[in-house]
Image 1 (cartoon, helix red, strand yellow):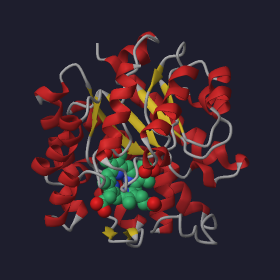
Image 2 (image 1 turned 45 degrees about the horizontal axis):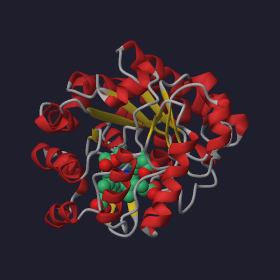
Image 3 (image 1 turned 120 degrees about the vertical axis):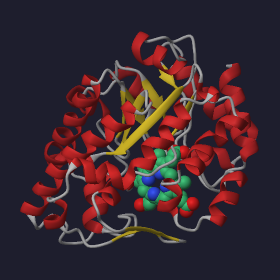
Image 4 (image 1 turned 180 degrees about the horizontal axis):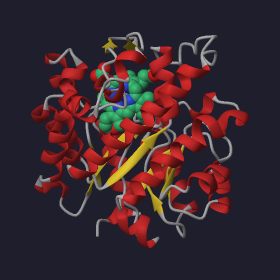
Length: 333
Ligand code: 1CP
């Protein structure tokens, strides 16, 4: 069994597997080289040769325990037929959400729109480089995708004032997301994904009173579905306060924590395996600080099943040398 699954399924504490959110991406010169020649990000995700190559780039450099498929959570709205663009220095920009059109879409049409993602997964999972490692597939959580689909741009800039006004549209969109996210998960698993991570990057935007409707109910549905395929599921509800409640209600196989939560409280309150936590900004400092901060997480979780990762994606300005240092340090711990 791979080290990550030993932690998830057998609660092993004497190993420290590591992978990094956004490990394939802009901090790597070899990625920027390919990106420069491929200005259309969606097309790049749908190019199985290049996207599988990009997925494996960080594994060539660092001793990581998993490959995470190079794709994006917004490939789902793209597959549904909503226009998705990535603008330089702006981020994602989505077209109008047309539920009339989307409700006519069936599984075959959806899969046809993004099948290269699955082909890419197949190439990665059959590659020698991931032997005894994991290939991770992922989806955006229903809430985070709803945010992008209705807001049509990053909520980092703003969440539109009337976001919650159209109840019927929200309910319908959540239904559509439930159906197609399950299809997306199933196809990733059938093509080699051994673990699924659910990214709820904007969970922190919601008030507690809205958690059942937008987070707990829709995410539980996906967690149950993924487990029914005999695949472990890691949930990352970035920015929430009550991880304990989240775990008790949603029951993920592993919980990925963000950099704002106190790992000491997590260790005390959470019984399931934990992943992540280290602030990505630490990788912009020097090696002494990196060592001290990474060691803090490793020490705190030394008797708890723990997968090393950051508390959010690696920042584009990170020097690959610092990543190398971090991975070696974790492996030597
Ligand atoms: O070169 C570029 O300009 C593209 C940058 C980029 C990359 C490398 C985007 C645009 N997406 C990705 C790949 C990606 N996205 C991966 C690949 C695998 C890996 O981790 O190595 C993954 C897992 C994602 C997931 C993703 N996309 C999330 C969830 C994780 C998170 O960071 O919170 C989110 C919110 C997105 C949306 C998205 N896609 C891209 C950007 C810049 C964003 C964020 C926009 C925003 O701030 O709202």
